[in-house]
Image (cartoon, rainbow, N blue to C red):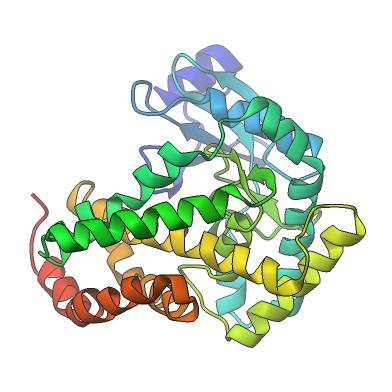
Length: 339
């Protein structure tokens, strides 16, 4: 279908070179396609009925308005779920970091781009995007008991645990809804930031953007589920970002301590969700690789829960019921075939 679209609608040679470029955690697939002169583009294939390209096109427009480097959309067929995009290359920030790249420079660029999104995109997000509201935040956290606990750890929460989780989720939702509202990418992490020759990083995978808490994307970046940094370095990066926003006139709270609390608690909501998502990606979708990222994600949950007195009962439950069983659950899952 992709070759037919390129040839019949866009005039490309029917035998043009076409290779898989990447896949993500959804049903979307990406293919790199070569023009006769050697230039490349990327085709997004988003199967209708499972994915909708219209949010991608909407957020592309919003982020371009913020001055962010996102892939230029050269052609779109919403009915077929096909987009022809600028090729931002194949080197993401995580690969550069693991290859010995300058973390200070890479995170400086990523935070500068995030500042553009948060400063310039806030008003448009509030007007045009869905809010990251109570229903959405709670639905995400329910993935923890449903997929990580019950399915992965084979741990069925009892009535007391269910009550504890409900209390914890309500607390986190209240905290997140007190934060200033900005444009939230939702997956602003090192695998979605592409190293480009100009205006680096290029930003991808933003179609699920919402209007939500200022701490959320900062967590995606600085408490990345794929790479970890010492707490002191994270806090320093966070303080520098807060100052950049403050000077520009943004609401950043009364102090660095308040901003750090916003960051940490947004992070706990995110990592509770991600534990469930990574488990679901294996059991529902057969994507094995994400199991290896569960230990770091759980460690973020453990570390944050220990830091806040409101979360001490939740922290004790995590230490008693979740942490001890993860290694065995991963081994069991890797030895099995998904249902």
